[in-house]
Image (cartoon, rainbow, N blue to C red; front, top):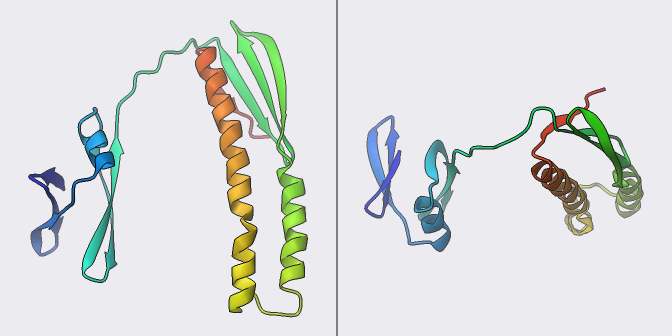
Length: 164
């Protein structure tokens, strides 16, 4: 697989084929700023068009002090973050996520919407899709992950996630 002269060359069981691609600003940003095309590819047929989802990879050098650690304890409604510098506990932060409460509230809403009806009915599916439960949960998780990443960068620390 490779990108050459405005085409994507892919090796198949029948030999090499070439797909032409349109210029795309985001594609150029990745191609010419140190990113490499990885071996992963997803093709999707859309009528006469073929959509290719490309994956890029890049090597980073991360500097960290092994005695600096940011630990996480993830629970249903909160995340506890402890920061160790030089092996000594410096700070403990508790982030309230309320994911458990959100899940309970959405289960009540889902039950109310689909009461007495199948979830495969069109209007029930539409109403359930409009709830956007996954989007709200994902947003909270991304914000917490961003906070942990910022703390780790700030302290040149390793991130450790508690299992039990």
